[in-house]
Amino acid sequence: MSRLLVVDDEPTVLSVLTATLRRNGHEVTPIGDGEKALAVLQQEDFDLILADIRMEPVDGLQLLERAREVRPYTPVILLTGYGSVKTAVEAMKGGAFDYCTKPFKMDELLVTVQRALRYRMVLMENKGLRDEIATRFGPAALIAESPAMRQVCEMVRRLGPSDETVLITGESGTGKEVVARAIHEMSHRRARPFVPINCAAMPEPLLESEMFGHVRGAFTGAVADKDGLFEAASGGTIFLDEVGAMPLSIQAKFLRVLQDKTVRKVGGTEARPVDVRVIAATNEPLEAGIQAGRFREDLFYRLNVIPIWLPPLRQRREDIVPLVRHFLQRERPAGAPLPKLDPAVERTLESYRWPGNVRELENAIRHALTFMHGDTITLDTLPARVREGASVQASASTSETLSSPADFRGRSLKAFLRQKEREYVQMVVDRMGGDKEAAAVALKISLTTLYRKLAGGPDE
Image (cartoon, rainbow, N blue to C red; front, top):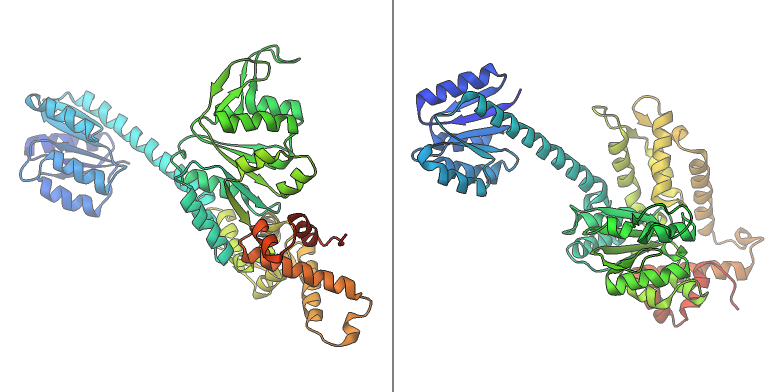
């Protein structure tokens, strides 16, 4: 049943409208004074407002203006005499849904009411979708208790309104696509498409066709012209995941897209303009790809306009339990109570190293929910690898605190020093906000040496 607010200072008209609308299944609140209607509108929400234009002391136009402020998703139908049609048309430009002239035909008014209610329903569905997207992919979806993730959130807020190219780096599973979507949702492009492409998931010919499109006859099976994903993303954002896996031949064409803002289809000769924002991501350092001859240096500098580094989950343990509660909130059935966490579970989750990062944590919570008994997640509901891995890590942490020579039996001095060196290099990288070039300068080593030491490789 729809809730309608009907406002008219003519008692007869108000009575007829109220009776007719109630017979048609609507809940009607009739008010004969615009000033009283304003007070009611401040306190209550309605699906539709019908208001006469000519009223004292508050007329329909003033009511419309206020409704647009306090109830932006509630459509307004204005009721007007023949001499005020011009005013009603101007009011529509100011946000009214429609107008009906007096004396009006009741069946036509009812049709207008149904159209307005359908319009309201679409508005609310779109609002719900936007809210869901904002929750899942906007800044609210970035759990940021740790200083490192708070810095990422701040960068997302600053980057959103711009059109700058962004390069997101971080281990697999750290949430690079979530950050990319958050940037898109904070931008003026949020109403246009967000198009993700995994550069490592397709062979070279298919990737080129998918990105740039092709013309008929360009290759076997090209029976018709096809637009590429750059054109599909027009006005929006294109997200290139695992960009380091892009073949060199396609990198050259992609570089031209970034430089000229145009795409040329496979087999075509015409360059078409495209308006897209590019966000790229990689879980492997592109600098290493440059040195190995797998990635173009000029493309790297085109992509690395604004770098964002996502720390692995093991380096932001403050975020683990908040992330768990976020996943529980999202995964629980509608209306079901939020599951509780056994304190031992929290300790275990915070002790585990999470090599799969946030993605692995999310899967672990789904596993726990599947095997949970009652309303509490207990240790036995966690995946075995998490329980066992946390136990091993706890033992290793304890051994690190021991000072007896026997504690290091079977462990060479070289291996111990290499581990401590790696920990120190990682600490400097973290202090530099993930900027490995700055860390290399601070450590007075080359970038190549820094990557080797982070990987735990031997010195040359």
